[in-house]
Image (tube, rainbow over all chains, first blue to last red; front, side, top):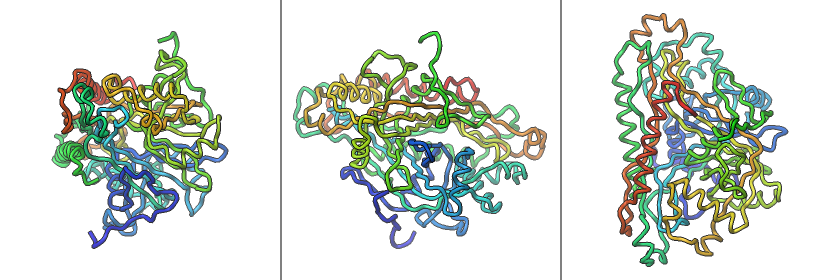
Length: 261
Length: 261
């Protein structure tokens, strides 16, 4: 980590306007949110349609030019998923400049139940990145991105799967690289915020439960495939245990407002 | 449930093109996915920007005109969240016709770890709805939507919170109603799919673990607010227990391909 945290510059596209929610422009925070999201919703404009298209994809921040780059450094977003013929053609038509895309990821960390329905809320973390997407053609960069993304599903999984990819597998894998133009994050943590009036409302206080219900994602007990012959490896067991512990701790920490989103 | 299931008509906007993933146009399936998603990503085009805007919002399907409507009936999507001045102004400018929006929600149900990196996948469910959003002005409809959305966070919560909303609360709550134009769902369930070649590859079979790691969301033990005076009510305890059991069962069922996404 350097002596200061890089931030995306604020402009009309990415500025978080709501005052009582916390916004952030720190690359480290935004990239971390994207990397910890199992699904990223990728939206782009479609000619002759009033509706943006939105596709669920898997993504991870990285730098092919400088693989040792830090999470807080300028990075590209590599995306894997079904690249529809529409997306493919739009990407090709956009040429080297790339197709403008908006990439969003959100976590819910808690249900905030206040005395009044109005003050109900979520503890949550949400990130959005704006950038230009191009298809990755260079086989070396494609391999880099495939390893990056596979290891984001389960760390060390790439080196522990059947390698190398066949030519057919390489051919039928599409990877998009998004050069980031800007981004922002929003989050809410802490406990219940109730009005002064409600905090003095004896009827409400004596009848309504107020508090936070933590929400987190769990990895369950692995189910081996019929053709599996080996024991669950240590790298997978470790990942499952660590993630379950981390996710639970995060949602509980968020209630206390001590989260480090 | 009627004698047949209504479907959204297929057109250029919503047609699922990938063959080996399963697409669905059934209203019941799509509405159910939206309703069970704690966050919906709402995207819309912004004049003078190449990037769609994407906002995380809370939403629920409903019908103010016919509140008893079934999940498989034509319904509107009611959205609650921060309605930015940009979204507000775009909505106003769009007039009665409404602002075209794309609403996406996705669940990850499992990490599918194959012998080859290439055949790694997710079990997942994803829904997208296209429609036209307008701000709800009618106080009765706004109350209907606030109750609908609050009860989607925790069933029966509305009637068990401090009511009625004050005038100030009503004024500062923005609800969007999306008239649905079309929609679709995509999902993947089942176990690992490996190539014939890999299934005959002794090296791979003897070294790579293959199987599915279930993924599901959990509600943790509720944390009461400092000003809370009452025990956790039965409706909340029941909801937490039921949801945790259902989510776990769903992700395990998905491994066997017996999910009813």
